[in-house]
Image (cartoon, rainbow, N blue to C red; front, side):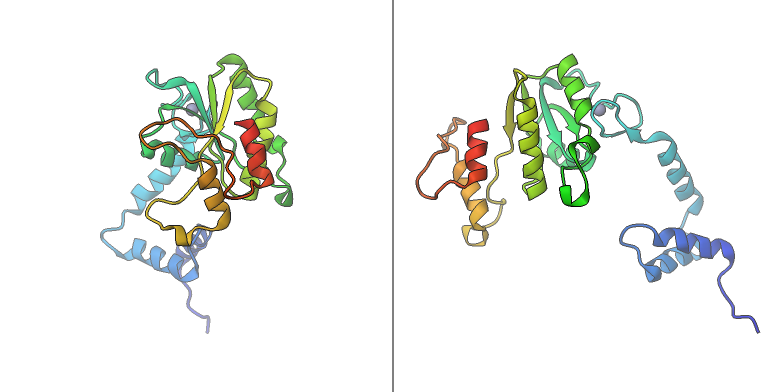
Length: 227
Ligand code: ZN
């Protein structure tokens, strides 16, 4: 007797669903069966949406953000401040900054960060495209909005060195305490950076970053000399 199995079309859908991030065998099977059985499932619509995505969404040739038209709506928006360019690691970093409502400039996504352990060097990132942008449409300020991890720091330092010859102010995001959290949960490095980047209340003037409460660490001393 031959053991019963799902029909080939269902098996192949389960196999495809299992390849999605965060979907295991059980979930893949549950989703596939729901698509076959539920009147609420519209597999045709889902199929069309996936096909459309593949045909129409691609990285913007200027900034690297997801777009259907090229250049993307951010790069072609005349209301944006062209004097400010924010450098981020991934296209997914753009929307959190947009949602913050605090930034009205343009973006440049690197497509990753320098990570020798993962064999990712500067040549693997969209750095030539960045240099090209600076030559054709130089902004007055570049904000390095990269991660606060070791690789993000290394990438920030690499870019700061590389961009030094340009007559452009290089800044980075202030780092400090997460909103809604107390001092008791902050680690030493976070507190160190929060103290370094402290601002005067009622004014946007930065205080000198030198202070004597904590001995400055090497990386922060380096940042201070760059900013
Ligand atoms: Zn763009």
